[in-house]
Image 1 (cartoon, rainbow, N blue to C red):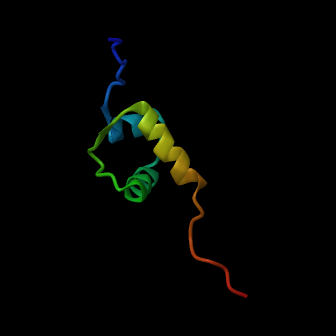
Image 2: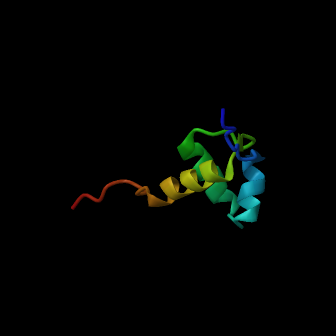
Length: 64
């Protein structure tokens, strides 16, 4: 049976600090992902959530 390589889990705050993210962005990403700010995630999960957050449209719709 092959062993699966598991990624190390780190607190979101540590990963955000490594990525030099402003606090507001970390909080908004966590809210959008449904995560608590003290959640432990892999670097891959963090990058996926960040990418998803950054690609979402923000704000309401424009009505003319």
